[in-house]
Length: 296
Figure 1: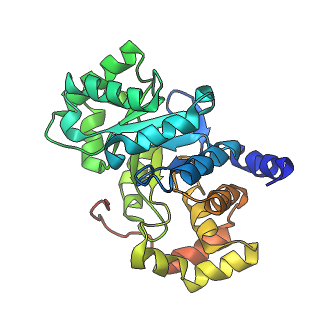
Figure 2: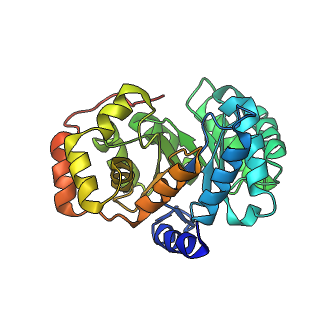
């Protein structure tokens, strides 16, 4: 890519921002890293891809101690070296490490693997047996120590969020990261409205589904393909543009190849019309009842 091409895409990406509860603006399109760093053969290409994603303006990188048991975090350390201040870095803690004392050690281990002294956002990966009050206390301690700037949760349904929010300091939750894509819209019935009411943005993981038949069926949809042709883009780019059609969802697609990360970034320039969204609503139905939270 030429510098002009990079700058043009970056300009589109940087126009799409989500505002966190503390006023911090982050890119609506970030980069997921699940399964990255686990193959030494793919390592160099993955590093180059993530670095290009940063150049294209997708400055939020999401990882977790679970991903390759730390291998993803180690990979990312090579990506952010020398440019830490340019990155909004997110990692997640295992539920069994989310106790008041164990969470500090878990966070320190993540920081060591990432070769940084702080996280921009630290998430509880999913709810476990540790009481929420204890996890919140640990998160607040990490904030006081300067190891994290803010904290949030992942895979929390509406009841979980309500309980969290009404716990001591629970209103400090910055984000809930959940599975969300055009073929999985269950959160729109109650979770997404609840978060909007309480000013808690959503991070959408697997915004293009998680491979297999679901992804093929979704991206092979006739209406999705028709709209993609009208915009002269790929169906996956329409699907990504759909996830960030509002200003309070951060979408974190994974890309382990250069061409893919460019396609992801270009989705930021697509502004779907109300007619486009209505057409998609007809084939990818909005939920009309409470649905179980999709988790992968």
